[in-house]
Amino acid sequence: MAELQRSVHLHPSILSADFSQLGEEIARIPSADAVHVDVMDNHFVPNLTLGLPVVEAIRRATSLPLDIHLMISDADRWAPGYAEAGAESVTFHAEASGAPIRLARELRARGAQAGMALKPATALEPYLDMLTELDMLLLMTVEPGFGGQAFLEVVLPKIRRARQAADDAGVPVAVQVDGGISAQTITAAAEAGADVFVAGSAVYGADDPDAALIALRDQAAAAQGSCG
Ligand code: DX5
Ligand code: ZN
Image 1 (cartoon, rainbow, N blue to C red):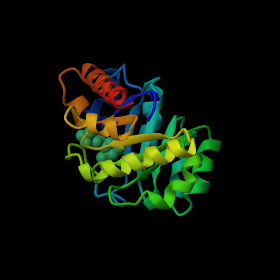
Image 2 (tube, helix red, strand yellow; image 1 turned 180 degrees about the vertical axis):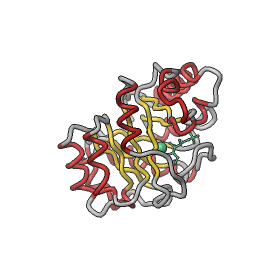
Image 3 (cartoon, protein in one colour; image 1 turned 60 degrees about the vertical axis):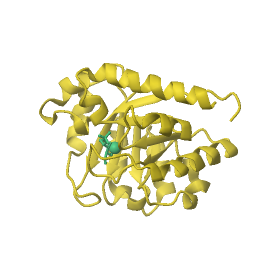
Image 4 (cartoon, rainbow, N blue to C red; image 1 turned 135 degrees about the vertical axis):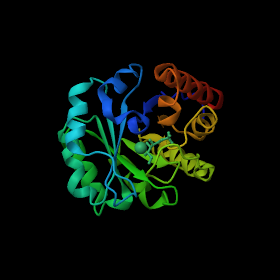
């Protein structure tokens, strides 16, 4: 991978923040590239978090970009509303969409970046021809549903294949990883080709969340540089 220098983005997940004071918790991460918001419906995943009214309140509470990760069934029906709420990116799960190309186009038409997520055991290959429809591909590095789980190294080859396929096709799609990202795992994910990193417990579990996210981002950038 010649001289290519990618940018590195660090998106703290507020799933590990104090839900009783989300505005204050987001104010603790001013250096974040975006706020990662995990929407769960207790159907697509066995957990329930928050929905559109809370996202709208978060939108009013911060000027940071919002990175919405929808872990909900029937994404075709519900995802466009999050773009209309002013999220910079909306990511739906491929497993929850009946028409992912149409949905990605609807998100872009509403002014959001279109993201599509794959669970750890979902194959990348059926989706390679639609990378041009996406601004971001999220490769889950844990089974979605909960923070604080261990990083699944089994996903690393899929990260490499995604990055290679995007580079080969000349498609400027970001490769995001989410789940178990920490000082112990971020280097491997960055070396595999990820460039957007979600971290929940590694940021909000630290005494100084902003310092933690900066350190993680620096570590990822150093790993990218060393394999560039
Ligand atoms: C899990 C969520 C993640 C979660 C990550 O399903 O999508 O965004 O917050 O938490 P950590 O970084 O603690 O694994
Ligand atoms: Zn997430």
